[in-house]
Image (cartoon, rainbow, N blue to C red):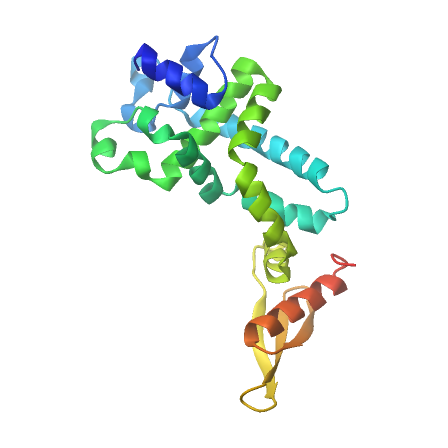
Length: 229
C-alpha cells in the first residue's frame, strides 16, 4: 500500500497507526496464505474485533436509552453487531479497496463480498484497539455506526422483531404465527392471530390486517414474558 493510500485510510479510520503491521494484518485475507511467509491474515484480529465491537455497542446502547429494558437493548444490539450491519459499515469506510486478496479471490469479487467485508471490518476494529486503545476503537465504531444506531431503535419498538430476537437468543427457534380467525366485512376485517413458541404459553392478538394482528400477538407474548410493561 502506497504512502498516499495509507494516509487516506488513516483519515478514514480516524487514527494513524504506530504499528502499521497491525493494519496490514487486518487487511490481509487468508487467500494470500501469509502464514507460509511468516505473516498472519486477519482471522485472529477478527476474533478480537468482534468482542471489542460487542463491548462498544453494548456500552453505547446502555448509555443511549436509560429507560429501555434488557429485551429492547438486546434487539438493538443484535441488529448492530450482525454481519450484515458490519459489512455495511465496511462499505462506508470503503475497506474493500484497501484489502489484500489472493488473485483468485480478487477475480471472484472478494472485495465486494459481505462476509469478507464484515471479517475485515472486525479485524480493523481489533487492530485499532491494539494500536490505540479502546477509546480509538470506540470512536471509529460510533462514527460509522451512527445511522445504524438510529434505525435499530425503530426495530426495538417493533414487537415482532423484539420477540424473534429474544426467542432465537434463548432457544434458536423463531416464533410461529397462525391465523386463528377472521371476522367482519371484507372492507373492515378483523383478524385474530395466535403466536406459539417453545417453552411459552400461546398468545393471541387482533388487528385490521394479518400483520397488525401478528404484532398484537407478539406484544401479548412479550407482556406475558415480562419483557414489556
